[in-house]
Image (cartoon, rainbow, N blue to C red; front, top):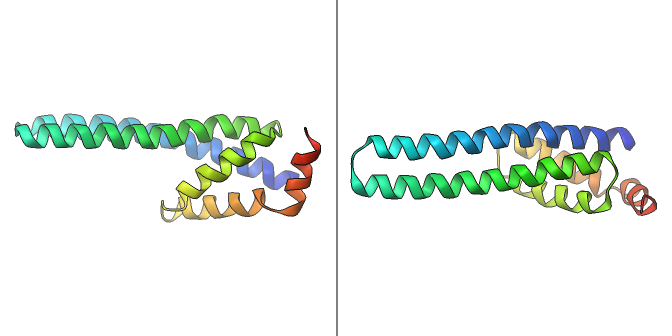
Length: 120
């Protein structure tokens, strides 16, 4: 199960790094795209939606990045954070669903719980 935990941690690190890039892309793309319309309503709505979307995706990704690093060190709190992040990733079809489901399976396994309980 230790190998599965390392895979979950590395996948979370990679997926979170890509999520941070996606958050920046969503932020800048929607803000500059809405400003290019020169329509005042589209500017405001597009900018607000882009900022909110960028913040949500970025926050989930930053939590996943920090928890992925801590999961490599077998920190018990990281297991819970990755479970929450993985639950959010289930909605991102198809790769988020695959990685999120795998992470949830690994981190809720009996052997993993025992491993993290002994690492206190």
